[in-house]
Image (cartoon, rainbow, N blue to C red; front, side, top):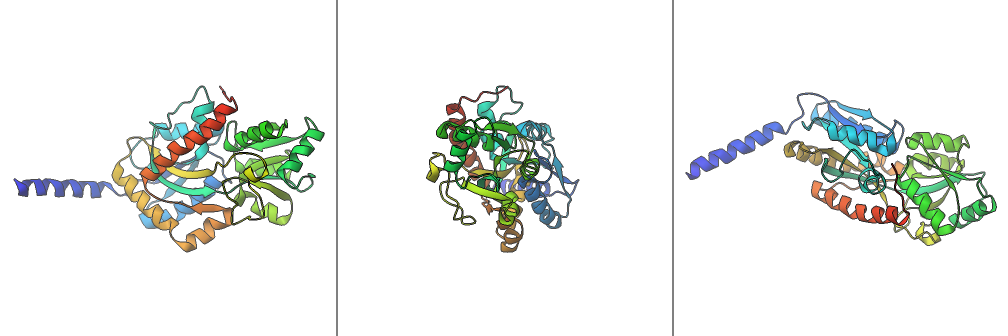
Length: 319
């Protein structure tokens, strides 16, 4: 009997091991934003290394629009065959469920966590020509010029949008919100002076900040970023919020655990490679995180409470 049980267990293990490969077809990473943003850049960087490690092509499929919900819905409905994944910003799973009345996915039921990839250093920026060097000066300028300023975001109810609403509520301003479909278009709009301010990942804006075409006025998070230690946090400037943005890989519910675990293993190893981090993450203001699928699930629950509380306090309820 013991011998039979051992043989059964060994057969199960061999079956699981056999399933844990990606030999059948290319692997798809759905990115719910246009090309040019942080999610796209990180997906392509990881994909390049994974292609060599797994001997299989990684295809990045950009599906932007509707505050990330088009791409997230595409991920939900994709075959759960181990070849479809999605690179989601925290907004999609931690904010959208609390602000949209109609949403085509359930962030707790329709996705399974694969790995927390990076935390993102977010900064509030304005063009250098705007006469404000910190958030209080921005508020003063907005009050002195009512109805003049606008603020771009990567979509309605995105984290940049919520930060704007928190800023308006705290500082007594009325800066208008203009949604775009991703970080690339937002940056282009700011450089073209079509908008007056935004909040985005530091890495996307760093070349423009260093070139002197943009100014960073405030940083997200509970502590100052080591990449921009001279920029005070929102909380230091009177905006009581310490939330952070992150990027993580998910899969449609039902995806085989063996393939999730194998992909998690490889990405953890890539994120632990100093050369990969130095080339692809640090310059963009992305801090590698990694960890287990369970750790990502715990992070989702924690952030749903923090960002959800903010959304509810602002009375955001969108169709």
